[in-house]
Length: 393
Ligand SMILES: Cc1cc2nc3c(=O)[nH]c(=O)nc-3n(C[C@H](O)[C@H](O)[C@H](O)COP(=O)(O)OP(=O)(O)OC[C@H]3O[C@@H](n4cnc5c(N)ncnc54)[C@H](O)[C@@H]3O)c2cc1C
Image (cartoon, rainbow, N blue to C red; front, side, top):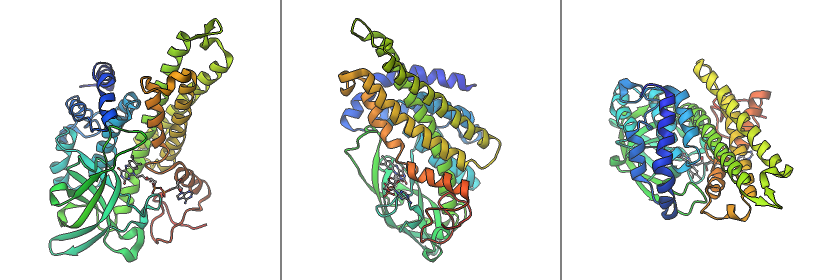
């Protein structure tokens, strides 16, 4: 595969020929769609950002975001690509040793193993620095104990990027990132009954005195929170691109339906109130895409893009919810049935304003950048939630 136009074309044909027909079965059963995930791996979709030297496709983040937009409307599959690349391959590329890169990136890129990013815990969500998982120093490595929850790929991953406290006294500066393998002794249980992302795997993850050798520390000891946050910059940007995909599909389906459905003797697309909804969706689509481009341009220039990623994620995820809502409105009662794709868009859009930092957290990140004052200073000393200098309100 040479260009990202080819990647887009591959994604469109994959969606057309395989995803549309087969994904609903897995969604209905809340089952992880292994055959479709294996196809994505064969097509190179899991290794777009991984350089060829490490077994990836090496097309970079621009191509990756374009792919996420294409796959955005099939969020259970889009999320597999996002977790694998934004949340696992990206921090290994940025902070891993050569040996760690060689050990994991080719297998991740080829989809031989899936990865997971384990930050959230039952008592620590938005306030991620308050995590309680503990990593105790022992000879030759560390022993990890604790519980993580809501972990995407929790039950299907072989590799976990786990954030744990090596020095609880140091607050956020006492957090370290570890590359933990399932075979080290990680246990997990599925979390079923999600409103959306029904074919995506989510699990609770248990670390019960799990020994991890010292060469599996990712980055330096105490650098974990910085790694977690810089990883989330990429995660937020990719979620924004996925949300653009939801808006695009919601508009596409709404336009087609509005032209075909007749009431009062003419297509409903001819009514001004329906056109208003379509026009708002179109403006949201273009604005969200431009915010993604804005953040990507900064990333490509090698600049910090925390603010831009937060703005893109906030706007695009909220806009995806608005668009999915309107899409159902335009479909009338038919849109309320699963048979129509807009119902899934509506359910899947909902998670986008919650994970990788809620909309409120994004606003606080943006507010902190504007004012230099953090409204969400936690009692945990050290780094701020957006990785910037700590200054409390
Ligand atoms: C399907 C799914 C998949 C997920 N995947 C992963 C994953 O792979 N890895 C991972 O580590 N985590 C994952 N998460 C966790 C997700 O990132 C968290 O759910 C999210 O960060 C919010 O945390 P919380 O649910 O504990 O909510 P809370 O932090 O308890 O927030 C509850 C409400 O309070 C608000 N709030 C909290 N603090 C403030 C504040 N200072 N000011 C204003 N409002 C505030 C929030 O915005 C929200 O409205 C996933 C979650 C879900 C549902």
